[in-house]
Image 1 (tube, rainbow, N blue to C red):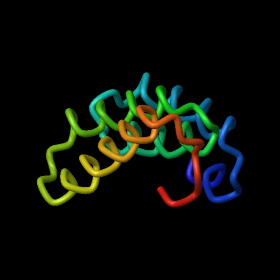
Image 2 (cartoon, rainbow, N blue to C red; image 1 turned 135 degrees about the vertical axis):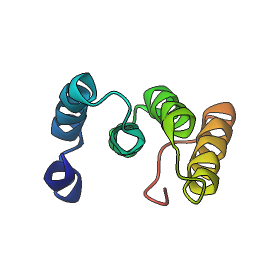
Image 3 (cartoon, rainbow, N blue to C red; image 1 turned 180 degrees about the vertical axis):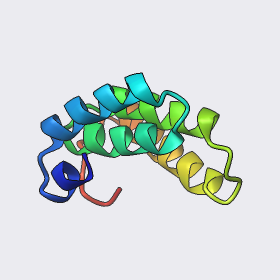
Length: 88
């Protein structure tokens, strides 16, 4: 999945990450990467859902502010009707 993300193959990354979730449903990093892939694939609502799941599952307090910022940014973009951009 990481290779797909690096190669900007977001649909393939989404597929791989969804399979990975089946086997490791507690791993917040899978949800985080799913959020990134969905964002760049233009699936903002799905990205928001994944980032929220990542925040909920994350046990690393040092990561929580970054994930919360992603959630806030997506909520703003969805609310404002903005198109996805590569700043995320």
